[in-house]
Image (cartoon, rainbow, N blue to C red; front, side):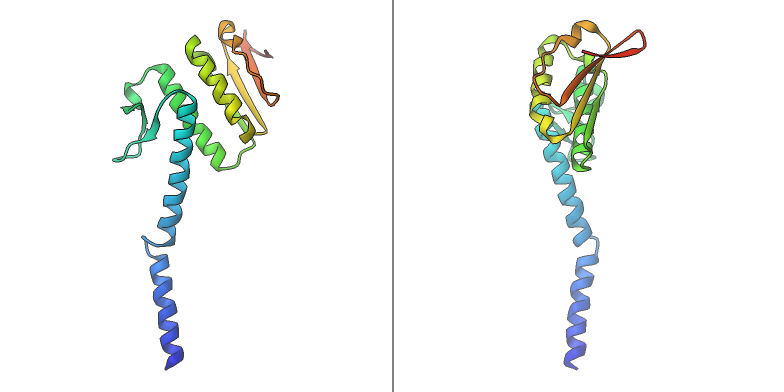
Length: 156
């Protein structure tokens, strides 16, 4: 009888742990918290508050939905999401395209982001298409800037 009671207690604990609000839920909440924390960190480095809306988990930029943001704001939101996914998946490389969408004032924030996040990746590749936007000085040995000109990719 004692053994049966112990088994029932074990099964009750397992049932509680495996129900929707148990271990799976805790793991999902932990993963979402790390994702949201990384979004916030990247957003801050890019000069914005980037988060997910409470209602439907859609990305928000300074409390505005993605659809109402400028091209530059959308790009920074996309970069924050890409960075969060790559960082949490332990991807060694980060590839950033269309960096030329940033205006002159945002380029220094972007350079700060690259230097700050550079240690999280083995390499970060940044592609730009306009030569005047390629002049962002980045002082980090593992960050490579590339320019796309006439269909050819050239290091800066």
